[in-house]
Amino acid sequence: ATPTEFMFDRKSGQRVMATSQDIRRSLIGTTKTLITILILMSLFSPYNYEPFQSMNAREESLSSIRDYLDMKHLGNCFITAMMFQQLVGLFGSATALTIEVMTGYRAVESMRNPVMQATSPSDFWGRRWNVAVHGALKRGVFKPVRRFSSSFVAALMAFIASGLFHEYLVHLTGMYNKEPRVADDNVCNALNTDYKPQLGSNMAFFAWNGVIMVTEKLLGRNRVMQSFGSTLPRFMVVFLTIMTALPLAHWFGNPYIKQGLLCDFQEGYFFVTKIV
Image (cartoon, rainbow, N blue to C red):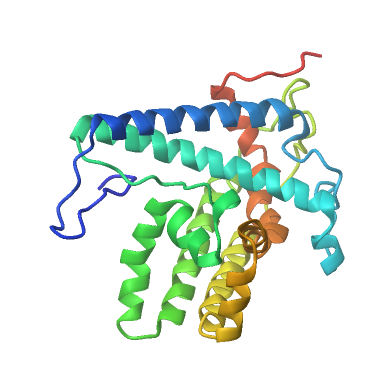
């Protein structure tokens, strides 16, 4: 087993061999992702990746649709989405590059710029975001459930399984007794060192997106909705797609960002920061 997906030939069913061009492409992709991460860290680390003073940044509860659609809130959520896309993408692309060099087989690109290019929720979660995990959930949850239930139920169960997995990650990273955190004046100086992650928010985030996926499948059968989607320009379709999840991105990001996980993670990187 490997933390990536191999590419298979559709006709023969055999794994595709990686060419020198494939390896070069993986190397370039890994390098670009790393550079993007360093830029994001340099820009947003001093604000603990929440540069805009939204209600969520002030650790206030969002109680209305207006709060969720506030531009400051959406700006912070967008930064959260980009950070996790790049970090997960770096792990995936570096792993794929290593496997291609060591085994000679071509690996599937794990992160395909979903935040900026996905044209539907199913395109976002099924073909662009963390393809390796998608493949594992499809084989381990979706297909077994599909044998005795509908595809709608199977898709929802896959998202619930993903939510449980991420709740486990939150438990590992934030719920055990740890040494008291000391804020660094130069890095993540906006960090609340007393923050305790709230269990359940990751599950809620993935359950919501599971419902969105099922809704998309149901509406996709409607001819009016099909024609409506085909008449919109691509950038508008991408915008509407990301807006199905972006206002709720803090449900996913808060347990990691507010406990300082990114601040811990960035210690292994070189980036620009202000020295007080």
